[in-house]
Amino acid sequence: YNAQNSSAEDFLNTLYDETTVVHKMNINPALLKSNGNLTENGLASILAQAYGEGKLKNKDFNKKQCLKIESLGSGSGYNTVQLFLVTSTCTPSTQPLLYIVKESKKGLTESTNLKQIEEYPGMKDLIAPKVVKGFPTISLPFFYFSYHPHHQNVHYIATMPAAKGAVLFDLLNEFRDDQSTKNAERIKKAYHILGVELGNFHRKFMKPIPGKKLGATVAHGDLHVHNIFYDEQTGHFTFIDNETMVRCFNKLKIPKIDFMRLIFPPFSTNDTIYEFKEIIKSVKPGTYLNITLKPFIKGYISTFNAQDRKQVLHDLREIFTTNIKADPLHFDQHYIHQIVKDYINPIFDDIEKTLGK
Image (cartoon, rainbow, N blue to C red; front, side, top):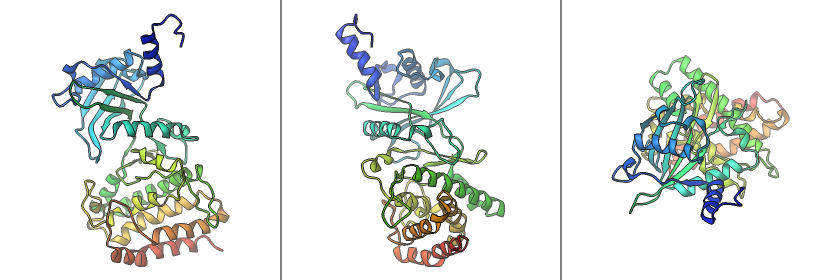
């Protein structure tokens, strides 16, 4: 660190700034609300300050004047305390760039977990803004900072690129409100692409399990339609709220949780902040499953070698037809059994016919 002539205090500060996940920011109390939360003007000042202090390396934050901040309240997340949309025009040669700044209730733990994901072998290739054909983009923060208002709790803040496109939930709602053939085809295309990209993601980290072709891997862990952004123009997905991936790092798992959270929440009996049931309000269950599950499974198995696809399909059928759970959501198991019998098993039968012997 070229610290031969530094004081002990300066050396320790340098060491801390270079090695810590979360950077401490000394903030003027005038930039905060009385409850300790950030103001829009205050956040612009802090981001520019962080750049000036060398803690935030991204040039898109080099001046307060080229940052436009919009408070999004706490968003729709269970654990989100503060949420901001940042528009940067600090780099004149590019289009305005969008970023999300977020405080989570589990801020320090989440920041540490997300840093583990960034450093997991093979993950760096997929982290935003990188786009790898056939794989999802994983959105992770690139700057974490903390601040400590006097006599209040410490706040832990993460800054990340805004995901491109719209949440998959919005596309499903468009079909719900206009159940046209055109909108059905848009859904089918999206879910086929999602199957391909998730299949490739799972396969990238997959380890074999005796007797199965669908092995143990890194699962997202919370892959519901509010955590998946779809860019319809480019046909590409971005996964957000990725902290739950770390649960697989010490012991890889069959990714059943990803399949459960992706397909089954609209059949839940409990009300949640996300209102999953709204997805299929006035949409027949068979229609929903044929435009989502069927193309998804086709896309997913297409990522495996041709000779393995039939066994992968059998492995998936077992997952989608037995022990349906997506905690904390609840299901009427009698109704789910009927859904499996009337729609899910026939979908797997139809796909199996296309695979030959």
